[in-house]
Image (tube, rainbow, N blue to C red; front, side, top):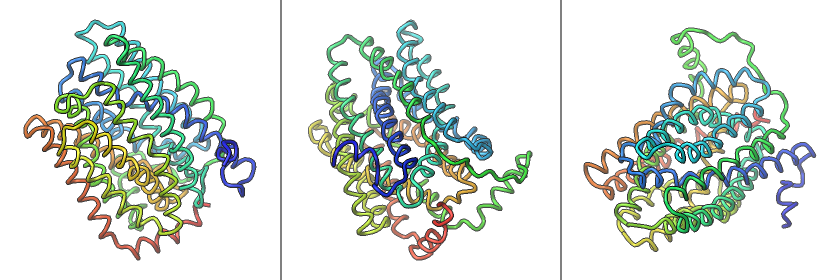
Length: 427
């Protein structure tokens, strides 16, 4: 398959859909470049002398902002007919935050650098919260009910390849330039990808989003009562997001532990840390196409169970070794499962979201995720200080495996009926 045919999407798409597919995929290149900064930010803080608690704030600060703003933002976005504009602006604002981190850390005195970086990261969580809502709504509108796996396979495989190459190159750059200038230059350069992302994402053309004309209640109690009323008959949605909450809590718990474990226990160099991240992201492209094909053969439930188990066992296996070569190999294998998890979590969530309340329902799902993301990283670093980094990884992996068990016991027939009946409304 040629690159042009790959970017064009399935042949049965109309010209507008095909152009949207292409813009989504080109935007993935810019996002892939920006994502290369993510694995190095906690390492940068660690090398600047940040405490375990401060490293944990990188994961908990976005959750805190999302916990406060997700529902109000969801209500605001629910009233916006042109959601693409907010998606593009929030993406650019979030990515530019990496550039500001590099610039500000360059001019601040050493004693202020950690605090300054955390302050800028806190500001960047505002557009990040809006992005977390608009992303799912826009991608679902571009893909429709029939092409979620197909669109996200293309987007995330491009993003994964771009990120893996960029991470590998940055790892080599970091080893060749003195600290901290190496990290500062890397963040400033990657932050410019936000402008490129805005250019492509703003070219997406979607019909005006349906807006519920019913007046929103203003009081907190009234607003909560309305959400409960809307959710009352959405049992499939509630069943899925509750189980996802458990699994993502385990994921969030180990997120700040990995860089600490690599630096303090394994004593991995920047080059090896880049290799570990590259191994996990480079294989994503293979994983996306593999799981996309499996979805047509075996269905999404099979994918959901295999991927939650495969990702959940990874922290436990990492904690059993200090050999950096073995960790890189494990990261590569886990990347295959992570690819399927990304696809199936997005697909299963959007199946259960009614189109007329898409922004509000996604915001509610994100609200649960923010709760776990706020508490779990701090809990994880606290457990690491108390019990040790390996034990913290075991606990986080155990929570993820509990999520796997809960997905395995999810009412299969009830949810499949509810989902299939809801799908035509998405078109």
